[in-house]
Image 1 (cartoon, one colour):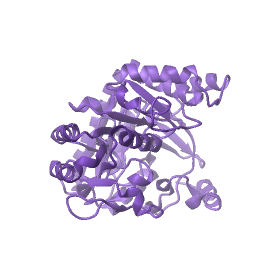
Image 2: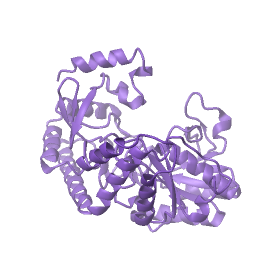
Image 3: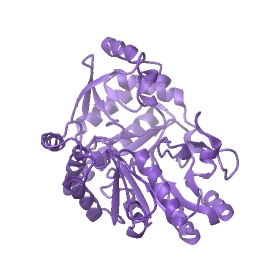
Length: 427
């Protein structure tokens, strides 16, 4: 595989961009190579600057569920750009998207558009504090909610912790009100509420986690979490930035008999453009300025081009429920095929999958249910697989702790190619 031009571009990028990238994981530091520099994409494939083509199982880290260069999305962007690019003023397009989401998603009475998943989650936390008048927020070890200071917390020892800064540049004061619980642990969340319940404004959770690998919360755990929030007057915040519109059109809410108070969206709802949103019950959302006292603003929020792309994407998904049947069938085929091959080859591996997102875990543990389980994985073996797949035209996330994403443009032939390449993997 020739990456000469990609290497030249990346080396030049390092002179002007920290690490040569605008998001750290793209640098492939753990893989020991410089990354392919991507030039174009179409359907389920992407092509780099050297002309190498890959079957894409990253999909821009989740948004491209309809595949690259979806014709309807592209046309909506072109039409909008011919009339407007940005105003920083109300537009009919933001109304159309907001109305569509409020009418087709569960538990969303009002919704506020923002520009990213991080902006959605940090705003939801502020809203929870403003609504309840309380200070502390619970998050779960292994869940990633963006690079807001209050989320960049590393768990200490013990069942519960007030946390320590998880990144340079984050002062202790910024995370003093963030509590860390263990994912899928009823004991952990119960103990934290017993100790701090009087001052807990909300709990934020990825109901289907994607940043410690794909891990779905158990139904029993989610019911207990909801019960504790109701008992102590805390808000339950679903971070569906990754799983929203992906595991189902209505997201992870369809997987549990649980009603969140606020839900955060991004990725897919922008049609591939930078977008985010958070929505929920009317009485909560009306605490936002200019109606209420919780201030949150953004010059580019509700940008017409983004709204046009997003409206096209979510409308298409809503109108084609058969897409999710297709994604489930291909996901099951890939999962079962890999597990069969791994068993035959004696590879210590398990797979977690929820609809069109999955993770290959190189571990002897039969079921990965939390961050501690995920950390048992053989990351060196994963790096070896990553390089093998890349050299053979398969593009996956360069981290053991990320998700693999399918799009509606993937076909049986693409899955067969993945399985054939995996079958030749020498571990």
